[in-house]
Image 1: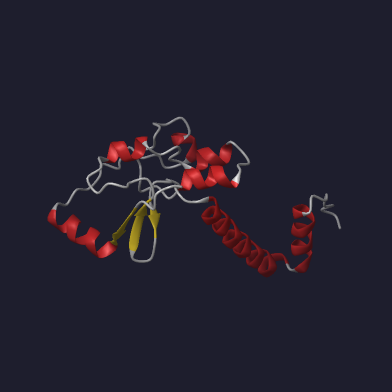
Image 2: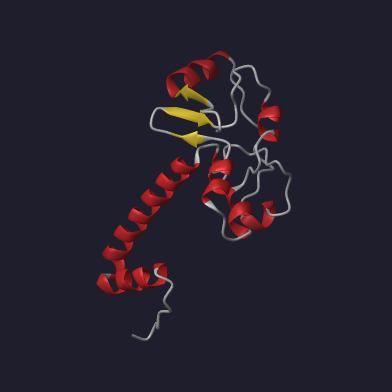
Length: 150
């Protein structure tokens, strides 16, 4: 079972940054996917929204693969099976256990994330396209083909 990782309160991070201000050199950071597709792996740009190394909560950061408070950052990245969600998505479908491994959580945790995402998707589809889109999504989930002209 994956470890819980480290959870860092934002207040503590602010205090640490005031004591030792370190601004990362971000001028070489890729701006679009085409620039980072063949980039350095493991990806060093932890601030990227697609990086799998940091989970931002309301008042804290979760580092799923950093168990030790004294761990070196390069060691933390090297322990991660994947660092970029876009790389994972480009390879196509994955099993729940694979996704859980990439996110540093249990299979049940990744299933909960998936269920939450499906609820958000359903809500957005209901607002945007109404009942017809919902019925089409249900048909797709059942494995049926959908005719876009109906």
